[in-house]
Amino acid sequence: MIGITFPILGGLIYSSIINLTGNENVNSKTDVNALIFALVFTFIVFSAIYWLLLTVRLYTRVENNGIHYRFPPMVNKWKHISKNELKSIEVKKYSPLGEYGGWGYRIGKNGKALNVRGNMGLAMELKDGKRLLLGTQQPEELKLALQKLHEEQTVY
Image: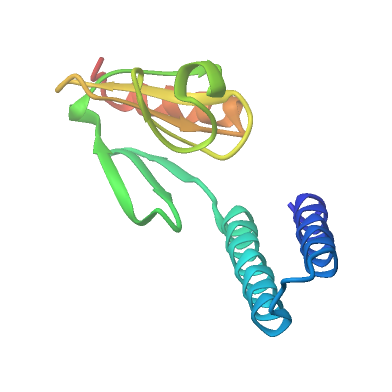
């Protein structure tokens, strides 16, 4: 992210200086204030995006009563999907860009997806027809937890 921020800020500064020095009809105090505002605003926006990328995490727990997840800062409280609500569940490979339009908190034609990176996820279909995909970096551990959940009480 920083690799993107500095060239953009550098380009903004360069183009602003060229614009200010190449125009005789420039009110320099007003233009300098506008330049400073633009630079500060750009820095704040890029810093906020960078902070968001550093803090976003997806937490998933498989317990004997169902699936729990949270996705701070978008979903701060633990959400619960009971075993009784599940129609089907599987750990699968998927295409984040093709199926959901990218990473993050996504709502698309295939349902809702919460993912941070990678292409493996826990795909769930609920009895009410809703679909949810939770991305994972630990597909094998997730498969083992689902097997244990399935053995305790069959819900599919």
